[in-house]
Image (cartoon, rainbow over all chains, first blue to last red; front, side, top):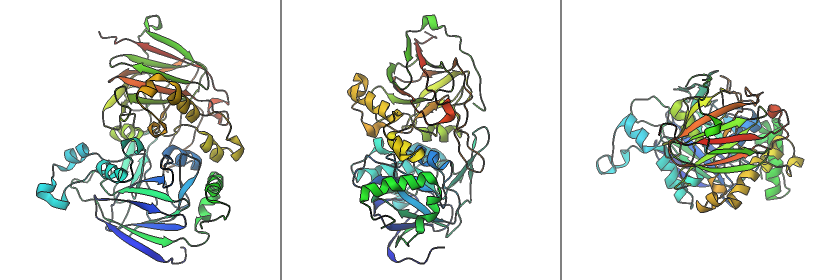
Length: 243
Length: 223
């Protein structure tokens, strides 16, 4: 456990809702699954040059992993690291399954409209991502494979996937320590493989904290991450470390 | 569409309307119309064929790795696999496959990711993203669709074997492919095929020896 950090701000995201914002280098964002079984579909972009974006394949290949957890980093398509995962009490975050769309939500959970349900209407992961992307001049072309924090999906030897309900418990959290000035896009709609019969995606709380020194040291055990951090340093100067 | 559906094709290469060779390390772009059948032949064995598909009418609809994986709950591609777009439509269906497994996770190599994976000095080496960007800059089909780097999502690696373990590990391992193995797919909509015949020299998965591929297209065999 790292030393307690200073809380800069916090934000509550009800289940199904969406959020985006700039997270600067040196900041740690704690995502907490408030009631258990939340899903946080997330994409990262370089806030200075949004053509640079999270890359699933580079993240997986560089770290020889299909799941993400503490000690892993989220890589950009330009050989850099957006953020390191510096704490994780859930243990597995899905990298490959993308987001639910409105037709999937309708088929699984039924039809809702704002007219009747007001803000209890069923939102899809895709629509949440597109709304948040749109705020920054981005859209469908920028919607690359995302991370689904708090969701666990495993593959058997044939490649068949299984969704594991209950991977994340109430209060589980993951810390993202940012190495780049990053635009983060978040949708808290249900994971597309979640077998729950009713639409009850969990809420997510965001807490922005200062990053303690040496928080990212576990990530640097992976040689590829060391090189990606070197590339990241080149973008910001020669001060080294997480600001 | 369970494990390794080895199905041979009955189509005769003599009857193909397209029959071309793409050299190692080169891009290749082709329009394939709905109903046509498209085959990629791994001439030398274990060659990575980095492939993307776009709707021929609008490039914003394109192959989606996540939809393809999630809607079939399957990481690998073989006969019977459907290749889904980001809009949830089936773009192509794999109708024959003598290799048995193709990768959806490994993406394309790039100068920048080569520095991370293999060493900071590898930046100048040729890469799949350079091929894709070269094609976007020169090919009239790509130009017509107004494509740029934004339009390069995560691609398929035909003939690559990237197994995932139950514990969540992932490795590029020796391929299941061999000289002459092929994969064949039927277009369910008009698509633009964008290929980089991978020039990677740092990864043992192709025996450090990128090789040519053969690309064939047949008109709809049912008409």
